[in-house]
Length: 284
Image (cartoon, rainbow, N blue to C red):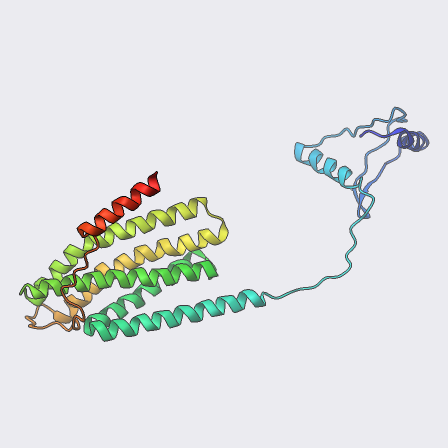
């Protein structure tokens, strides 16, 4: 410790008059340390010797620095504020997720009939897996987690739609129901895998570089990807196998196609030339 001229004089008088006594170091009215004065300290520099660890010495130094401020801490008021706004936001998020999932389920049931019912059962399994995994990890339900949950619903439905459309294509070629189901799953598998691996890579990057809320979103999304692939590829297939039971079924309730043989010329010659021109202008 170093003192200015005035402090050096006062500290010298203090130590001279109290040699052999303890000098208490206080912070906020509490004694933090009480070293013994071995001799008068007249040079304006003082040090505390003793059997201190590095952490203890650092703590004492911080106390001495804090005591240099002329203003102490005084509690004027204590107040507890409940997380009203946060709870309202979570309630709104849950409500939006339930409404969105309800709309999706109704659409799947109307458009795909029995196949839509299979997708609904698989989606219920999906939600159970995700919520069970989050509970197992001790994770709290936050707004980013809700966003990841809603996105997972879309991913799961998208996988089911890909499979159902593949099955429809196979049925149009004249295959039997069970053969169309088997081929549809085989052909849709790699498309679903590619899409989910890409999304999983994004979730991994978000978890590695993100902060707390972003990590919560990434964890929910990552768990949801694995759950969606399992329920869409394995659970729905097992449901079909259980319902059909090896029987020869002539028709499969998979709904009617509203739009068939749709071809949109996104890359016609005129469009390609226009895109090339725009790319060249942007590059320049």
